[in-house]
Length: 391
Image (cartoon, rainbow, N blue to C red; front, side, top):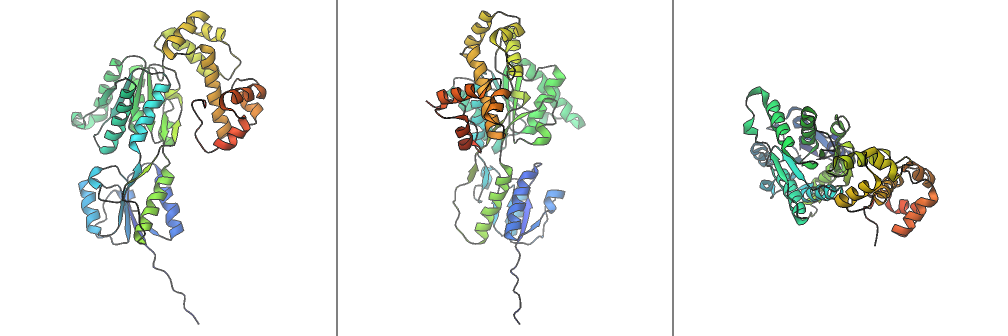
């Protein structure tokens, strides 16, 4: 009778601190496939398990105590940070340069001319994201105001209250409207807190964008938060896959693996178009809030308390297009989203976006994109919708 031979199960340690469970879920998916045993002590206690022995480790390295600990393990380690001091380790992390550039491009597309960025640290991930944001704006001949809080300014138990008071004061100094890019959703919530305390309107006066698209932050904020989407589940899965290759002595590329952002989940905190004229702001707010209804240019002008001619002048001056063109662009953008993310018929997409009927939507697609809405849907179901028509 033959005896079953059991393959030794690999024991893997996680030293990660993300509040987002999607990363851990991605690691878990791979671990289940690979038959790993995961050790999770650090995730729950944030205490390094000195004396642990196993086969591999996935770590947010960089901190001196963590670096000392993983050196003591003498086993393969995959780093999931953008810390240059960990450059000797196999690494996978978000493409922070692409994230900063995406934020700048998004705000520029909304017509903003005033920009700021907010951070409370100078870690590499923060520095790269904000430097990329500033550099992309510079290419378009714009500058950005830094809102950089020094943690040393926090004195005693009232540190958050002191920071919010400072942040509210700094936000009130900014011209209107200003677009604020934050390193992550947590810091974006800080901006929203300060605006709510200071009576600053979001998004008409201050528009706020975070990174991570964490539901508990984005959906449960006083003003729902727009955020750059990161595929954290794929992040965790790929980190585990990289470690598995090392454990099995398979070659990996020496350069860090960079995960591109997936796009922007647009919510109320940036749902605006940057116009400084108060009457123009009211008119555009009406357009953005009611474009799904059969409104016309006279309705929009009336909502702003101005004439059709005044509205046309303001929109041309500040956004460089006519109000009718702008209204159609907003509706088409929504049509893209519904075609990509829903199972609505083309007829219903046209109705839900204020375009009226399927024939009109089909004519628009054929004119701008040389294809039909149905064919576009098949080609782009799992991709971000295009922003500009093909030339």
